[in-house]
Image (tube, rainbow, N blue to C red):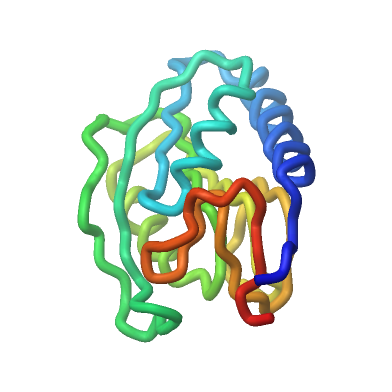
Length: 168
């Protein structure tokens, strides 16, 4: 494995995103936003992100699966849905990486049907060429296969503090 991003670089990106979202929400004068974590990969990023935010917020979780190993050709399944009523609320979907964009497209469609006031996409990593829109991202990467900081390889290496390229 080759180190791609240090803990310091990751946390700087998290702080940047938290500040951007806090700025977005200064203009909102409604209920606190709902931050939705996409399990399992985003949980570490999500935890650091919501702790870095100054805005009062609510939390929820959704679980979507699109990968088996390094194959994402099997479509997207929603394994756990949110429990919150997001009707008329500002909602942020928090993901670890936007890769092909297919998981996020499906989640976006799914959550849009629940009538949020706004629905924004937040991701720590976005792959160059990912075709799904995002509102906030931390770091753009190339075609590396990454693990660590919540990202996994068949369930392993989520606990690494750094992000590594395992193609090397």
